[in-house]
Every structure is written in C-alpha cells, then in structure tokens.
Length: 135
Image 1 (cartoon, helix red, strand yellow):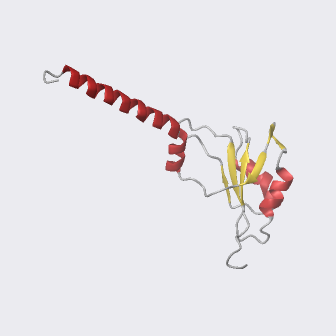
Image 2: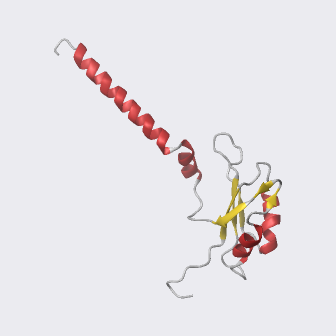
Image 3: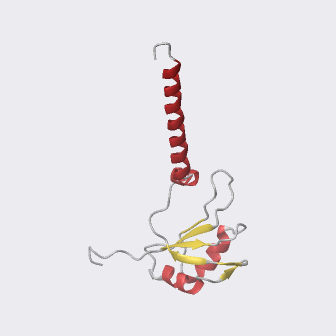
C-alpha cells in the first residue's frame, strides 16, 4: 500500500434498525460476510431508547478487507424484522457519549435560547436605567 492510499473503509452505517433489535441479531446477519469486530446500537442519552441506527465494524486487518463492501452490497435494502435496512459506509469516527449528548440537545435550540436570554438581559438593563433616579 503506498503512503497516499487509504485503507478500505470497514465500518458500515445502518439506518432503519427496528427498536427491538439486539446486537447479537445484527452480528449474526452481518457476520455472514466476514468477522465482526464491533456492533454499536446507540441509545438516546435521556430516554435510553434505541435511536434507530447502528454501526457495524469489520476489522481493518481482516483477511479480506472487502467484507464490509460485500455486506453492503448484499444487505442494503433488505427486509429485517419488518424494516428495510439502509446501509452505507460510515463517515467519520465514532462519537463519544459527550459528543452525542451535545448533538441530541441540538445547537439551534441552544442558540435560540441564548439569543432570547440576551434580549431579555438587554431589556432588563434598559428598564433598570429608566427606573434609576439618575436617568
């Protein structure tokens, strides 16, 4: 492998995963295409319920680095416990729990909230000046 070539992507992002799915069931389904190093079913931080997607990781040192590619080709759009799985290669690295909490809170809400608070502060300061015996 040259220094400019990238190793093959061995991580799959799977959407439309039923809420009742266990990691063992996904490991069994995807394991037909090669050894699995990790199955990750993220849970919502607050409700502790599944978020409806999963990551399947094939080892990058596998005998055949095309295992993930084969699984994607054969399993994308297949029916799994009543749901059509949507599979693509994962982009980026796995998020830490703190990154997931931040994402779930949603930046737009926190920005609106901060803007609203600053507007109130501005009004308060204006009111306090107008009520001042010196102003």
